Image (cartoon, rainbow, N blue to C red; front, top):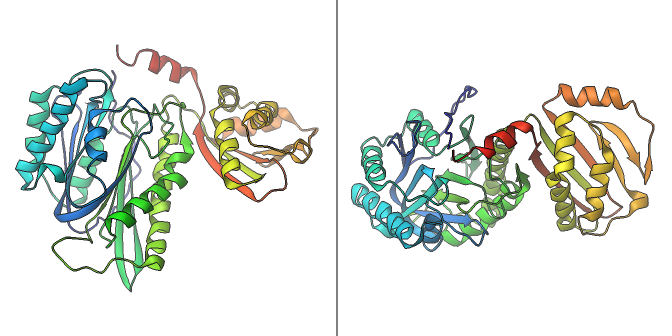
Length: 410
């Protein structure tokens, strides 16, 4: 396995939710010596919700954490990188429990209030001596400064070329509520519930059930609409942490209108993260968006967009800057949902190449040059006259991706 340090990060400034401390340390789990244990701790019992992989092969930390959420007493989100603790049998379950118990002891809470996530190579037992040392070191470095937040975000990365963090504020009830989020991922990305690993944090007052429903909707509009390689991970987890709702204080939860305002802001935060995942796709040269309209429903449009974006032939055409529109149109045709071929049209980077079932005469060389010159490509596909529309974001497929993943564990 090759671990790469997050690098070339654009200068950012984060606003952090109240009541959360962070830490990230290097425990030696990664052969590279890069940070590999992350800890996020709330100052008081907080609402935590989660969405998880739909893969039938599920990692031990997912088994434990999804059984605990949603909750109103959460205190810790503990993550190790460099080892997925997946396909590790009963030993993996016991190791994940041991991680929760140690973190609980060090932070003064119950192990039921510790959520655990892992990412890295599948099928290898956790090096628990190193993991324990990392948890102890992280607990001793907890802080609420931006540098602590960054350290925590760096420690969840594996093959990421840059860290993925976003923050935002939203005004509700005449006061500002903060949203900060981090995620990791560059390969094995085709979420079907959430993303690889991610944590969205806020100091807004949201109850457990509302938080769970909100996170599911946010994931559906963002993380579930991106793909790098079509491979759904065994460890996919996104946590939502809300410190504004405590069992020890009578805090009025958001009403439905207030929750809608907050959710829109959180969705934009998650979308920015989701697009970072695609832009950081292993070996990726270009980011492309498939935008579908005219389908019978939004659900049909989503299936079509996802199918087009997942096609290896489409992805390699994007790599080569090849305006091979036939690959895109034919992928829409086999996606499943009904389309109207005589009302099907395609625009690539602003150039109409196919209109109402008929190919157009274009300067293919010029369009190719335009595609090659840009790091982002847009395919705008109309499949009929229905109301359904959806967007899906994906990376291209390059020789570098094949080389990297052919040597991942060696």
